[in-house]
Length: 377
Image (cartoon, rainbow, N blue to C red; front, side, top):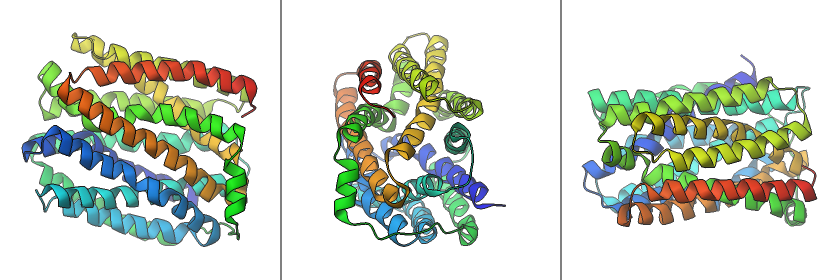
């Protein structure tokens, strides 16, 4: 098994565990008595970790080692998930989710940087499409399995099994190849980021990630209240469209790299993603489900295209820290979305965050069209 395949497997397990918790954990929090504002705060702690650690993680990848960063993150992530099962105290849960967010972020940054820095010849759509495919497949499979487990057993069993899965893949990290490292000054990082091209793209990323906040706070409660679904039905509603997101990323990997076509499809996918998010609040659950599929199909293509564009923005020597700064921007969107949409959802209506977030994605598609006209990505 080469390093590409090892990273893909680690990414699959990481997303299998972390994102199913991300989608389903509000149900656990409701069961143990956390009110809406506490749920929003805990998920904001999870989302906030990259604000502090994205750039340091990327800098470590540039200067020292991707391999060591991955090893530490896998262990920390497994330990954090194990600890979730042991507390019902709000402040302790918030701290655990902060550490879980740190570990997940280090893995996110480091796995991406391996692909950013790797020099082997490969079609760029295939390279980053497959990266996104395994991430999306992990999200879908983990959420499906998590829903089954929480429905037929309980959340504690989920936490134990997911922690064990993470500890079991630790041995894979010892055979990850090392990439060349460099000394990069802070000034070089500033110059790579503080320019019009990068800043315009960063705004696209910020708006794009706002809807993650809705998905991490009000998505599963919305499905339970709006349609009266149980935990199993919630997991099926969430996970089955996610398989379509994986399919979309795989289709991206099968398309020959073409700069103009990628830009056009990226904007179409953004518009479709927003439209699907708005229309999923339809009272007919079958139509709602179909529009959620539309949203995930758009998201799959968007996810692959974003990492491809990130790989083109920076030089190989400093792409770790520079892409880490972009991850911080994405985190800002996630945090703002978690706080705003949890407040809006739990105080006004659980359907409203999806309408607002969908409108923002559609507007973002028009803004992206402007950005692609004035800059070459």
